[in-house]
Amino acid sequence: MAPTGQRRSGYSRRAQYNLFTGYIIAGIGALIGAVLLVLSFFQPQLFGGLRGAAADGVSPATETSATVRTGSKSIWDSISGYYRAGSKNAELKREIEIARIRLAEAQAVEQENLRLKALLGLREEDVEPVAVTRLVGSTASSTRRFAYVGAGSDQGVEVGMPIRSPRGVVGRVLETGSDSARILLLTDTESVLPVRRASDEVVAFAEGRGDGLLRIRLINLGINPLEKGDLFVTSGAGGYYRPGAAVAILVEKTDDGGLARMVSDPAATDFVSIDPIFEPEAALAVETPTETELSD
Amino acid sequence: MERIDPRARSDAYGNRINRSHSTFLATVVPWGSILLASILPLFPIASALPLLPPLGFLMLLGWRLVRPGLLPVWAGIPLGLFDDLFSGQPFGFAILTWSLALIGIEILEGRLPWRAFWQDWFTAGIVVSVYLIVGWLLSGATPNIHSLIALVPQLVLSILLFPILSRIVARLDRFRLHRWRTI
Image (cartoon, rainbow over all chains, first blue to last red; front, side, top):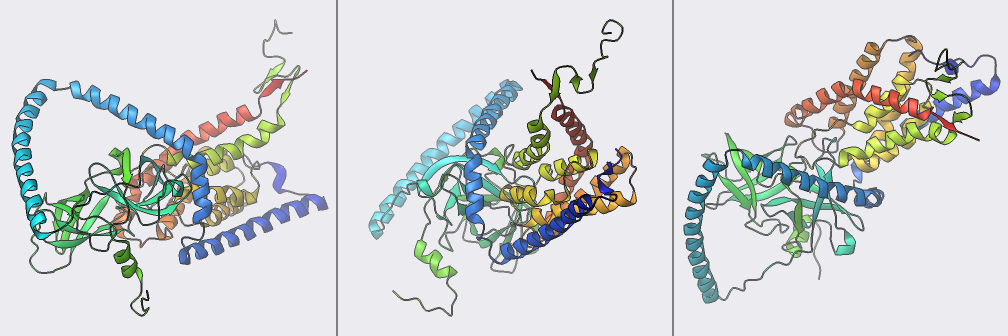
């Protein structure tokens, strides 16, 4: 469409000034934007309150859509379940038999663990989640991987708390609003998580790559012991995450570790639990620079 | 008169007798639709990689290119401020880029006042590509080659979505200027 005649102000002083002021305001706006952008690079938490309030404002709508999303997904699952139902049924029966055997074995191991721990005098405590809520949405159009959950500081959620789904770790809390919280997903490029291989004590860092995969970087360099299909769990180092929660499965081997896929893909996650920080003192000590002396 | 031509007393926006435009809708629809499009990417899926096009920005481009002269040059400030609250980019990113995009299109329009849709699509494609790549650079995270590759599907989707969005904008514009019954 051709532009309207608004750009040509003619002889009218008023129209000329209006047009000119518009350009000036637009230029000043761009400058303000640049200043705010620089500010939020150096102080990322500066506008957290504003964002938290905004996320609280839309949380009724996002929670409703999350409910609908989960519902429609389960309908699709039940439709696709009918496809090849017979062969699947037989396969599942075989799997369940093996699983029963493994379960019995695991119970035996657990029993033995309990006995050994009692022998050592270790105390076993069960962790009570701070809140159980839905993953209500994510910043699906930005390069950064953030998601929103439907619980905030009113429910006792604090910055740094780990988020788990029934399958494994999802991320940790970055900002809290009163009824919602923004979380950093594991696949974000700023996310680093200390992990170990589930089968032994090979320790590594799981870093987000920003394209949905995690990069596993081994701490002890040398011969790369990893194999495709290795499961990685949290090691508990750093003090934020409880050890032993599933994180990722290796899909490709590289020189210094490998590439891994998240066990609990946020797209397939609906309910998550927000756990308290595993060792708050340790997490604080890691954050404190070495030059600062800790006093009690 | 109606017997000869049933549309004699009406135009594209409805019957002209006893009807008039709503000032409220005429002002609110463009701004409201851009704000709504800014929130929309929050809803569909909590994906592990960026997939959805920046709908708010595309809607802004749609209104700017399909209906020039409707949005003022400074529209990027309030609209960008709102988008910053939800987009996940560092605060101020949308204020800066949306303002710059509107100023840029204004300059371009001074050079090429008469355009067909293909030129508009071309302009929007280039502006969106630059927007996404600058967003990747200024996202606050360390830019790496993998997240750049992950940007490609989003970029392709954004460019392909523009014609659809401009049809939606045209529909919204007809709704904006619809004549409602007055007494």
